[in-house]
Image (tube, helix red, strand yellow):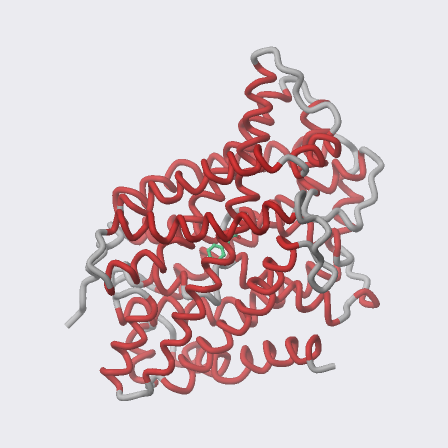
Length: 451
Ligand code: PFF
């Protein structure tokens, strides 16, 4: 008999796809993808990234969702209940533990960056009412990073928004938030791409993003691309497992998974195609844009456009919403765990988890100014946390999920969760989680760390 989740269920297949796509599409696509492409050689990075999505991301996405749906609880408890059901070791619940830690770390800096988008939205709103607007993108961005009070204000606002939705629960909170905002963001990106075409530098952007220079592919580029594939698809920290727990039984996981991956990749590529024409049009260096890339480049386009302040406001607000629908999926696993394990209500649990994340976020925030001297492995505090969580912990989490789904879970169980796949496709999936994905992840990590 099918179990039900105590946290509620998605009302339909579309609701799940929207929520999961809402989790996947976020700052990772629009802020992180373009800046990583810029820092890692353009086309070379994009090519490896796309390969990682297809060969590693997609099979692990199916695995996470099916494990979640089978267990119907927060990831740790899902894995513990599967241990009871199938007799395997309880130690596999480490996937859920590690995932929760990654989620907390990622949300801590994610919220700070989402705060930047709120601040930019605010600046454009002020401009509409006669304020100065953003004349000099780099100066505005530099000024923001150097101002801990403003950063703290917006980081706090964003965490309150995130806690608010998670406190409301699955249907009322998470689902409602995504239905309208995702399509609006998509439309906005298309408008920006059209602007990019009209700058006359669209060709240069396409060449930068899609002509790989193979000599640029080294272990750092490959690791960045792998980490980004996990980050962007929300994989490796059991977040998709948490969302899978609320998925009705009749929904096809492969179909939903492919739609989510297509949407996610599509938005990232669109973001690249929106941003790089502007980079070329303003004669900027496409390489080495760093985390400030969109925050310095897009204002140049907005100040050049007729009605740019309105576009700027709409863009940064929608980006904030995209970040919001992702951040709720980062706060959901620790919240669901606290609800299951402690007498706390959903509301108190989300507040407790949220305050913890908020406090850790202060490290990233102060690393831009007060502690700007602190360097870990050549990175500032935010960069170091981002690297460890996204490029190391997510691939490791994904590796464990993959081995677990391929070797520990019985083929009968996984087959039952993927009835829509033909026998051939099911076998292909099973071997990709057993062998292909784990070997590729291990190879990439060993290139970077064992060398
Ligand atoms: N996928 C989100 C993005 O691309 O912005 C970030 C993210 C959300 C990562 C949820 C991991 C996660 F569980």
